[in-house]
Length: 267
Image 1: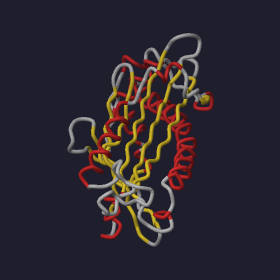
Image 2 (image 1 turned 135 degrees about the vertical axis):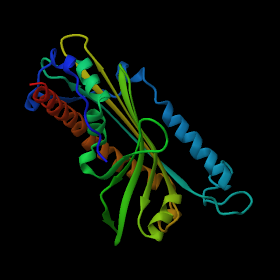
Image 3 (image 1 turned 135 degrees about the horizontal axis):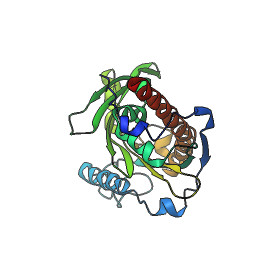
């Protein structure tokens, strides 16, 4: 189900359509003062949830020895924790203010842009309250199986920022595929802010990704967790390094299309 874009005639008087070719994306320093002020509380909640679940499962605690055995002799559930983060600062084109981008992200068309609904198999409002959506990605073939990733996302736009948070992630497919849902958990948070200060208004995108993966197959189960976490972190970081800059470019292109549609509707 698609969300129809609403009309904002008051907005069009102040802003004109922008040429997408003029949008320029530059990398931001992840350690800049701007991002230091914005700590990600969701990551702390995610880690607390993982620790609580491990405690309930009776594994993965501090009593595990190097071989993955608990003091009682019961095999421990060995979990690798992977993480990556990418901060990107996008310079807004001439004539486009941060407030204009904020208005777009509060519009249903902006929500569709954030969720990249064009790349989804289905997109429906979720049952977890206002601003939640269940997004089903197109089926992919993985190790001989057909897998459909399903994400439950929450979008919270305000007058000063916009947050996209992943509430859950699972795979749909055969029974053997869906059993893998018990072996991992994931957390993602995309925090977008904007400003109109100085000569260069900017859009700041801060994406944090965390994955907990149960290590149970050989030879990985015989190796230290660091042998899984280090290459896993590099893989996830490479993924964010490619996708986050494209997100900034896509948002500006979709903003331009949205403004054009409003102009056509009001003419």
